[in-house]
Image 1 (tube, one colour):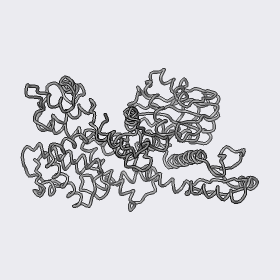
Image 2 (image 1 turned 45 degrees about the vertical axis):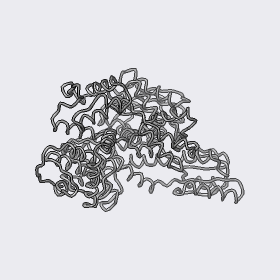
Image 3 (image 1 turned 180 degrees about the vertical axis):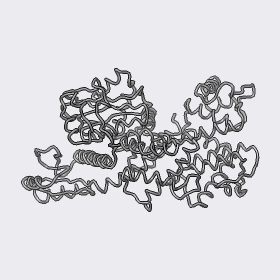
Image 4 (image 1 turned 60 degrees about the vertical axis):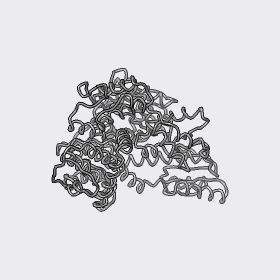
Length: 620
């Protein structure tokens, strides 16, 4: 049997006429890419006996084999298996929603034994959500021994997690249908009145909180507030007590918007200061009149409000963002850290990841405009074949600067006066940047070109960011300050990039700086996200999250004499692997490494180093 989320993934795939990427599925169901991969693995296992298959093509996406088979729709009608984690979350929310819950009723609902339900409730105590004094047990059922304020604090805290929101809304829609409809209409009224639109998960969070406070009303007291006109209207048949109004007002003002504005406590000038700092430090190509600027401003207004009131927000893509945009994450965090210290704020890693996502979209747009790649087309065949090849390449890479088609002799003349990022040729040439293809471009040729093009564009994006942002140049940073001599290794070559990562990380593992699971997570990150960690040509800065098995800060280095094809998706050549373990998010080890190596002399010395002491001597 399948879970709710797995069925939702199937629905998306059934409706889609083409492949759906892992990231698109993750965004649709509001979980991480990693969770989607686990779900797809479970789906494949569950569907095997039914002769149904989910096709997963690396770097392309996911689709259903034989989607017209009626068996796919039959699966959606089958009962859903509820795992222990979902049972525990549902039990916790039931205790908060209802005066009392029955062991027998829950046992029947989940189709498990009474002992299982009793064990699930005991497990809630071990997760620090509750303690033994919070639970009342009797022959009539189980209830919470907490006052209203404690229960509301607990509920609002749980609603900061996406999974809890989904379960809460399901419970509310099922058992408090009338209140739920009123709340939905009220939220639409707030949006229309301000010309604003809540982001999907913010709207769900607001719905879940407003519903709960309507159900768990204590007393009606008038209260003045920024949004009091919307919180006291009898038009929708909703009533909140004084404490409820304050909580809902706080939820509204900390919501993320896709358009429009809402009245907030945070001064726009306060947020403008932060935006100006980001724009200036990262040299973002945006003006106050641009949509990207206004979108970032809307997010920061809500983010600073959440920070001031210690409200947490769940970002299911946090890990993916930190791994995929590692240098940008550290650069943005460096700016935020200075702002936090000045204004006594603290942005969570979830908040930082959201801000990075806003900034990344702007930088990618900028690099797209500024990173046209010079591509030489070389073909020794006749004019018809040469022109056909050129036309097909133009369709494949419409935004790049295609030159040619050249004969070999013409190419050598232009080679002396023009710098080419990529050479696509129908014959072999003595050049490191050449891709040899069939004149009619086979599927393998197209995949090879797309992979190389992606690597070149990503490299140019990283170069742009590195040029736009550097850490303080008040004093030199020495490599020996960042890495110990015993953590540097020189090797001839590796044929397997996974083994190369394991070897590069071994000094940190042996010294107790990381655990084995950190190495596993790094390999997973490269397999799943592609070689995003190759920020400088031929140099990979490999890492995982600070909660993935890091004991303390540390860096190791492996320099290989021969380049290695690095990554499963969009593989690129790598000759140096740095493994970075950061226990604290403000470690900035990556930025300081890049600061040293971006110097071309240091880069060349590192790539060609045959002496560990020569690497330690690098300064920047």
